[in-house]
Image: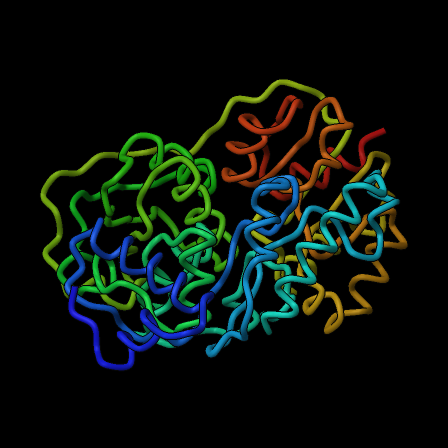
Length: 373
């Protein structure tokens, strides 16, 4: 793979961490037949919850030195940093999670602890990125028109420290073409879940049967990424590049619906993290009613800090607005029997990862379940 003189110096220099990062990037590039590296505008790092990485991952992180040279944000941790005891997190997990975060803080990473970096540091059309959170990758490619492959935690860290990523896949225009047309109806998040599972590696061109909100698009992309391998979709009249390619002749229809039967003892929203608009919608749907069951809404600390009055009103109704984490990456979810979600991504990962039953509904159905005696 071709390297510039600067890149060769990073590979062969005295900085052990930078040299190791370049080795990671070159190995990833050669595995994907990349001819060169490309400079990136930002990185978003996954693999943050101690529940996911364990002691082995933490030891590797603690071996890193240096400072990031591009803006770099961080995925959710395994707990709310302030309300971890309230979530049922024990001292051992808390201490290990803090060790993880200390590493990233020392590297100069923004301890944003959110899976929605597009709300924090939004990229622009055509920007090359190194993002490693699946929903964020799909959002960046499909809604904004930025360019990123589906990175993993180590490659995103390497990109943050070097400012480079291998140039292949979705960084290249022709690789972003859709290969199948999908007509979508029903629940949008559930449709994304089914499309990802059905189509796997395809980049679909989506034709919705109605106008969809930004929140629905976010849930749709997150679900596609969770059950499939693709890192983008095209949506008619939404994706900036959708007119740049031929419309695929093969067409299928998907009606979004997921079967779920258990009676929830925890209702959760915020996978991906909720926006200000979603918090406002939840408050409106609550309509002054008190939550009768545990109702956890996950968002970024930035969104909470910028909307204290909405958060205060929700908390007054018995809704816990939690930051820094979500129901998927936190072991706190394990102490419940049945968890209700409005996210296809959460439905998928909770079913695989947590020892709980999972119920699915749209946002209104989640609120109604929370206020039901």
